[in-house]
Length: 297
Image 1 (cartoon, helix red, strand yellow):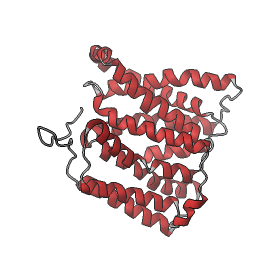
Image 2 (spheres, helix red, strand yellow; image 1 turned 90 degrees about the vertical axis):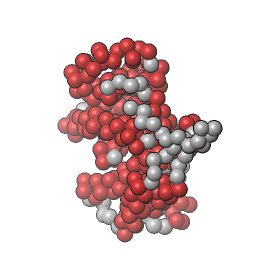
Image 3 (tube, helix red, strand yellow; image 1 turned 60 degrees about the vertical axis):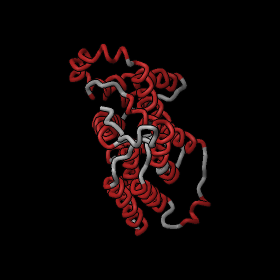
């Protein structure tokens, strides 16, 4: 979440120099090139399984790698950080809802309380401790795109349980390749439309950052976490991004931290602790009783 918070800050910082699909294409191209030497062997071993399960891999790649990043980067061209944070706060609840509707996974009371506390903390930060600030929010094109990315990411998180039983590096490489193939034509369209990348040392550094830390490192960690603790808990961790974003903004942009930041952060951390302490969610009770959510890995 720390690296993903930095991803949003970097994308917002270079929005005038780098169009959104070009940033996404560069991100996944760098990540795939760095990963390729280590992924060749595992991909060869897992090729038969990948061929048999290619629709699932393609779907997950389109959702979590292609569509999510294209929509998020496009939204960050227009929307404010306040609106984006508020929309991202919906991810934990949406993941829990989709998990229940699609796979019958129940969210216990303790975990539901944790989700509510984390969302409340994010809302408190976004509204700066003033509920009346909700009346001053503006919802525009960028917000719609960010909201769409939130929905896409929630589906990706829930559907990770369907990924094939292959090496994590094989799965990551395959989905990164989907991202490159889907973002490439869109990036070319941006260039043809007169929106080339305006190269500089800062822009090169931005590409390097998004290609390594929010891509290679974060996706390995997030996918492993979703396999170990379930979609709802992994989705709840998204609420950590505003926390890291606040501290990164203070450290890198000189923005001050106020009392409402610390109150909101306390609620977020309390919610995550509650989610960690809650019993592992299970499927809705049926003829065979309540079953535990199996580890998809």
